[in-house]
Image (cartoon, rainbow, N blue to C red; front, side, top):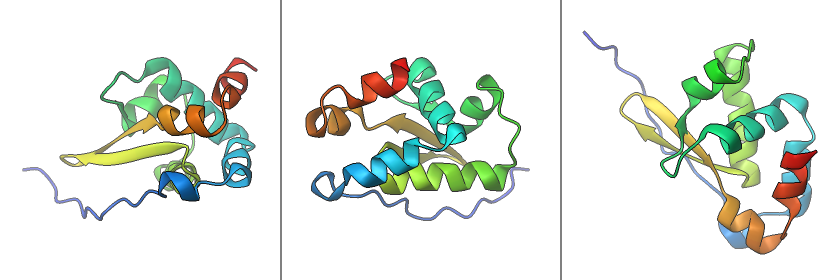
Length: 111
């Protein structure tokens, strides 16, 4: 029997409201930067499950801590997330970041 998971709508900022200061603040935290790097390295066009990011990235943070980090990244406009069944998927908003600030994401990922 599969347990019920409460799913709420995941909101994302519109492209024109994403601010550079919010993006940089989100990326300044080492765990969030590692999440972004893991997603960039391992996600396909359909994204990657958040659980897979946690497992493949070697994270030791609790589920609630990881949820907080994802929320900060999502609200800053760095990632987009959606439900697939009872699991969340995530991918970078590369198309947004590359248009607004060309080279920023590549520089952050390369460092």
